[in-house]
Image 1 (cartoon, rainbow, N blue to C red):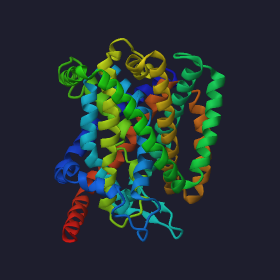
Image 2: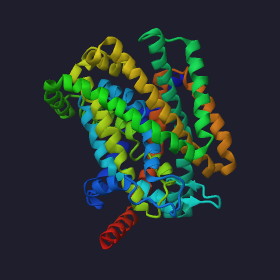
Image 3: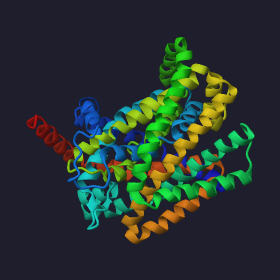
Image 4: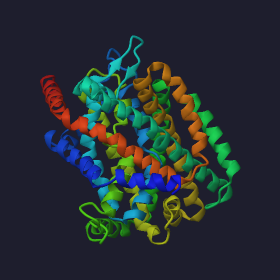
Length: 454
């Protein structure tokens, strides 16, 4: 058995029924305990994002908007394009429904984790912020659970080389090969050049820390979202009469295929949707709290509300558009290759030349934005485990893995990324359940305060 088969087997064990239940169950539990914070806090979250409550006197390093942009730059990656395609090919159109369910309950999960991250963050004498699940596990659950915090930090470092690094650069290399040589073609020399070039570009951003990352993300994220949304809407408007049928197909196959509940409670359809949903929006993973903890605010709940918008934007909007384009065009019925399905769908919608080029350009933007933000997740984890002096060496290792990822086999990268995601999620979800009473308390106190200030 080679390394690719070993990674695939381990990935299958990690993403079994227990983790599925823990992931969805935690989201449902928090949704109920927080009285559907996704609904009642949505409008206020949007108001916070406008800068209405920003204060330069508050502790932190970046604004609410830049924190959201930086976190979105990590979540809106190739998972929104390739990941959705993989979910549909592995689980059928019905997997899309379960991706959306993951996002809806994930809004509560992300709210809770980012609230705790901001509440328990550490700010050093230079004003630099260190936050994330490793801090709220140790400080919230107590020093005796430091081992759990250390496990999370270790998995974060390893995951940063997978989901945030090699998977992204691998897709950039495929896209650039497609633009230069045509779809389906690859050149090893081009891959190496792509790896070196993007490692150099990423270096100019990440070596400046979170302020540099936030500044660049605030420019890239709105542009790339608008670019992708407009392209998707153009296809959907052209095929507007087919949209009701596409939605009906997604709903039907979410429950009525033999694979939906095959092999036990959670079958191929649900597993594919939930796994791809987490891969896309990272709700429950514990990564986003690391960036949101750096937000300039003295109100932890306020940053939790901003963070709650991530799964909505990432999955409910961006991934849904990708899925609808794939189903409306019928591309999933004629293409069986994960890395080519979305390109095929856009080619069918926009025309062979334009569609493939559109997707290739979108992947390059999405993947680049993920590359810069995931480096921050890894360096905060490295700082937690080995001290602040480990941050710079980690960043250089991260840049080296960009070059490695450009030439590695894509299926191996996907399985490796999935495995690390699952292992990251477990300590984070355990802490969220244990610390949920504190989240409820902080939330009630914040909304009571806001009501009194009106």
